[in-house]
Picture (cartoon, rainbow, N blue to C red):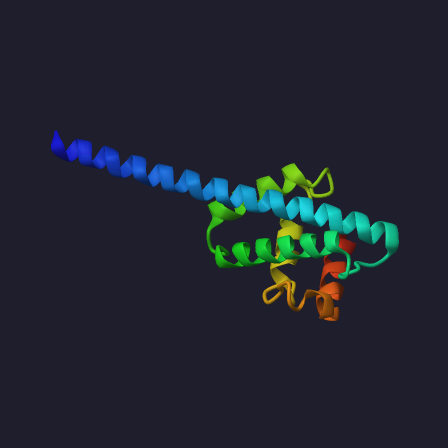
Length: 139
């Protein structure tokens, strides 16, 4: 009976951990989806992404954080699925189930996001070009 109780507690802990990980991934996807939607809206209205604008800076930093988290969990199919679910839910229809996988693949292949921070963002022309390349997918 003691073994059964120990096994049940271990199983519950594993389920709780997976559920927690999935909620973290979904939240990261939601943040990413909102950021991409904001960056795309700016790009569509102006034809560029101005990284001296505070809203664009915040969106670019959110995108960079999502990129890093996704890259760190690249081999975790559950993380990717939860991330993608959050991405679709928060992008105001920009990212759909039809293009989400292609977007995630493109995000993972985007260079210039890994080392993005408040100190270097406004000076990073290559980062702006990478973001424009990423959001052009929706044109």
